[in-house]
Length: 352
Ligand code: DP6
Image 1 (spheres, rainbow, N blue to C red):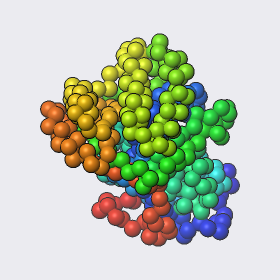
Image 2 (image 1 turned 180 degrees about the vertical axis):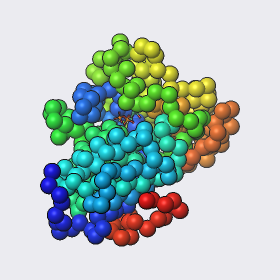
Image 3 (image 1 turned 90 degrees about the vertical axis):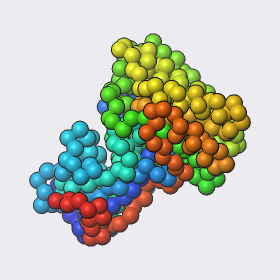
């Protein structure tokens, strides 16, 4: 690849800082139709939060001989290969071979089923696009983010977001888009943290095992279009009851598919299950609330603003719930600074 000439629009230095938030899937992504291109076997629908934030700066620097990556102040070997693959996709778009320094910070536990890869890669692609002076647009950014971590495609957008399965072999039609802006139906999310540690089997490995060995994998895929249609209708109509029905169904069905793999995947702990029961008791007593759980033991309760404090108190009282994080719905990934301003250390860490 030729060394980059400096096209118009590239800040000097070629650096930018961006932030993105975690998203919570209401109709889950589980399974891949192409592992190399990271194409999903099903579409999915999520909400982007206004908390659980990743802030990432990236600096493409011709003096570097290799990419350098730090997550929460540490060189992170576990994510390094995926970060370099993401930088390569951006470099390819720009026709540039400069290596980069990446510095990323999460304000929540990394790798614990709180979608740190979603916010992380959405922030990285958004910062990288700005640092290289590219004008990809949000849809194309979601295509790039998707290749790094599927759920990251959704964190490019705010509010209610659908990521399309797509049909094309090259994945060009597997992108995300906003279904409804956050302000149009401002639900609240309470994240009950039951275990801060990293999950034992990550989503990527869990999906692979589930695709290969779960007898329910085919049924999971066949039923997804109907679930997506119900969620789309519920969101358009602000119909909380219909959204509750499809979101709990999708969550439990995803976990049932994963549990039926060999060996079975059990992402929950006792507190996760107790929190599910608490959410259902609250609902039986008249609160608008439902739960969802991803590939980890944290429970997310989605509720309306008027019921949020009661749900928070009830989850906090569950034995084994360490703390509860409350979020509203938020915006998609955003550039915070470009050029010199992006290199200012806003975290107290040295980035060299
Ligand atoms: C259970 O996006 O982390 O949270 O594409 O392999 O990086 P990769 O997987 P990832 O999977 C998320 C799975 C999930 C459900 C969801 O977010 O839709």
